[in-house]
Image 1 (tube, rainbow, N blue to C red):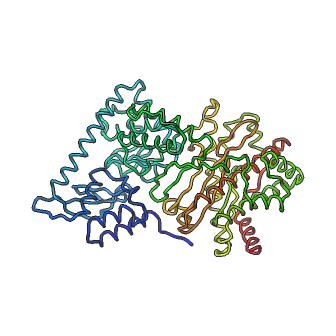
Image 2: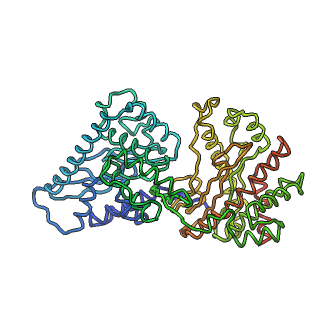
Image 3: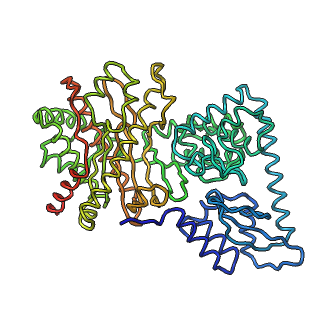
Length: 564
């Protein structure tokens, strides 16, 4: 079951294969695409213009005269880098190949890059000097957002800027970088002493954050960034909204970056109105993109889902034609089960997860939630928000249902280990998201603990088995995640729950699978909300769900084997 073919293995395999190739262009493409695992167009976004030009130049036959230059290709900071000087190898810098090209070709490409870079720096200096906002305020704002969101990796030429694990040079100290903990460095040093690339990074993020929610930052994961690229992105994003019928043509392509950012922010709000905005993620490259679902059926209060509807009627005698009917019947259902309310809820949750798992051919279906529901209700009513944030991960909850296929092909103990690994991680995730619900509360201090901004957008991921240790070991390659809010005593708790699906193998989730998951999510969310409401009405502050354990998962799996 354990699979050690992680990201580092993929890189090593690709380099070894490239080094056996006779054509430099083929070798570079092999490493660039990680042996054809990545699409060439998205992989090219990690390259500088001169590197792209060299790659294209190698596609054509040429002869080198005596005036040639030796170029060296490295896999450095998770990208292919081409240099005319040798670079010391390390864990983050692997030599790939060397090759020769005419010196005048390389010099020409270098000069073009240098001119573009000079123009970028001139533009950045003008923007900084003309801004009414102090540069350190901008740095603090960018640092705040990047400290509390999913990992990002940006490239400005040969420089990397990242908060991702072993590449983190923004908020931690790493021996692999000449300068690290860059936010502290920038805050203490005059910007005229910075590396010029730093100016581009700060200006780029400053305007990008003005254009919508902070997840916009993740759309440039593992890509080169510049103001020129950002301007093109704004224009393309507007064109996307225009083609989707989201906005009108009232957009000035000649306006300033600031004006375009403000326009995009308004257009994003319109995109979210009546449409499902989700993110499509490449788990290998970590590149992410914003996508949209404009489906009339998803806009219904409680969309129809035939297998779930049939199950609700036949197994639980619940109404579901309208949302209010489903909510009312759930309250009656929980009330009728009284002291067995927990069992009633888990039976319903299991049944919904089983339907969507079977319909999407998932190997795992699960929902993250809260364990000590009565305690959370009491603390919310008493407005003891600091105590809520201080609760440890064991106060959160996750129920994992293995898919029929996984139950059939894997030993019960192994499947239970996978379910427990997922459960443990999800308890941490719930704890990690909670503080973001109190960012505006003066009585809450989260300065001494880690947290992420609440997840609000669904996402679909492919090639997801290479970076995350749990996914590597369990070979989880495709995922769907749908986060949701729950309400307690009139207060919204964003990302207090979610529905997730996972699938092993290479078969990616489809749009149809995503739609099924989005509808199933609605049924789970309402079931969990009504459980909270029921417990709140009773003022039952002692109510809690029983944490899932390896033993309970083994019992669940063995029961499923008998049923199958």
